[in-house]
Length: 176
Image (cartoon, rainbow, N blue to C red):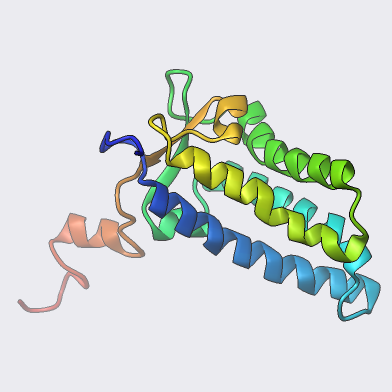
């Protein structure tokens, strides 16, 4: 049973956010790799290129969006430091995704699969992380190594929210 503390994000929200971000990173990575290699399915490059693109995507999101990403923002969750302050440190921003990619590359090296089957191994670290989310502490390998937690964040108010709060409506001259 997962942790029932309302501060920490529900595992189903974390999985949905991860799948959303994985889809975005995979589409972008596939597009970039196809442009560079000029092949439709260059599995030798995809086997190491897609995990690296996802790692760069995740580091960029954690840094620029302060612990969020498109998937996390869609589901109102956020990665925070478990060291007593909410802001992530630079080493946590790098270490969290690098841990997951290192787990993938470690499994790829251990199983020594041909390149066309190495992408199948992405499911194994993902399943390990999902399994750990449903434990009593609801913490993953990447959370342990990077000393982070995933919490429920305040819902995003969207564009123009500060004008609506400041003027009691938007636009301010519109009759009630």
